[in-house]
Amino acid sequence: MNASTGVSTADLYDERGDELQSVSTQLQNLGGLARFSGPVRTVRCHRDNALLKSVLGTPGEGAVLVIDGGGALESALVGDIIAGLGVENGWAGIVVNGVIRDRAAISGLPIGLKALGSNPAKSSKTGEGEADVPVTFGGVVFRPGAILWSDEDGILVER
Ligand SMILES: O=C([O-])CC(=O)C(=O)O
Image (cartoon, rainbow, N blue to C red; front, side, top):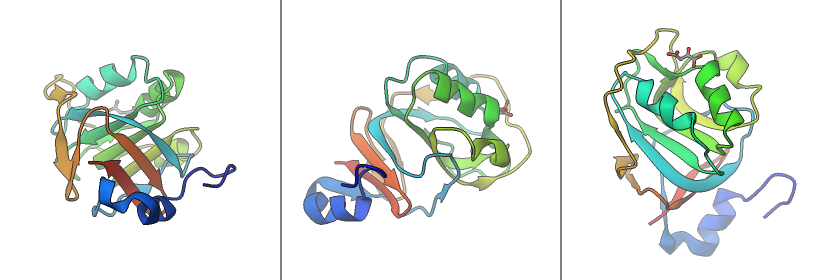
């Protein structure tokens, strides 16, 4: 633990590896905060971001929203307005198995954000998808309520 930068996932893994899952997906650190942690909340959706926008519009209370977009690279699930909602509502971070847009603006926001990359194309807004269900990617099951830690090395999640 380093007070100025938060917990190191490598140190945490050395201490508690048996209790933790490590995400193999090579997500990029795109938010203003490289290190973040908190209890998992989830959304599963496919190229549609109305549901995740409504969730980020509610109090986050320090949680991390894990969005399983199925790894789709064709359209962005989060932009600077949606990420800004997360900041305003007290979310610690957003993890996207998919892509974002407004990358330059998002890099200056005080929130953790990891994603596969970026694409300027926008997603649909029908509201399809599910919230607060277990989601799986990168060899990890993200259960709502499990604690997640993220830094420059990767993401660890309680089993
Ligand atoms: O509206 C969208 O699809 C995402 C977006 O651009 C934003 O959050 O700023």
